[in-house]
Length: 246
Image (cartoon, rainbow, N blue to C red):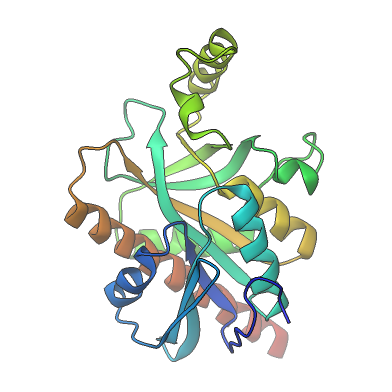
């Protein structure tokens, strides 16, 4: 039995995972999912049918350690496609509040991923799952940004004034922007690293926020990202079944 998720049992092989547990029921409802809400130790899950398949919407909590726990234990109960849908901070002027960012890899300034993979190995989403999500975005004509994202442990290091390493961090943020890193967040690096080590598929779709985005707009865009995640993941799963039969 998983240590933190305890008695969670599921037939779902696909899961959308978000940081804030309070978002889980709303995200599930936004894509027409209705089911019992399961809660334990701060983790929240809803299981329901989507396109005739059982899927989960779950929470990870904030940061790499809680994401790694959730990813490990969801993998233990049978989840094989895990997509983070959450928020991020823009690092470029052309990434506006409310825009969807699809990560092609995480710059790892977090600690959790380094305990799974040496820093010389990139932490990347699964290419097949990423391709399925991009195809779903094209089919739905959903505008998005595609590129590298940044993962950190210290939320306020993005504004390092007053920190002992303020000059070092300011220089690092400038460098990341100069090479085109799109956004920063706190969970994708750990998710990608766990997935690469354990052998399941993972991806991340993020909504840029800046404190000005109305809550209704945020949840609408998170709902869109959830649909893209599920549509892409289930299409990928069907393709895998077809290829296996052939």
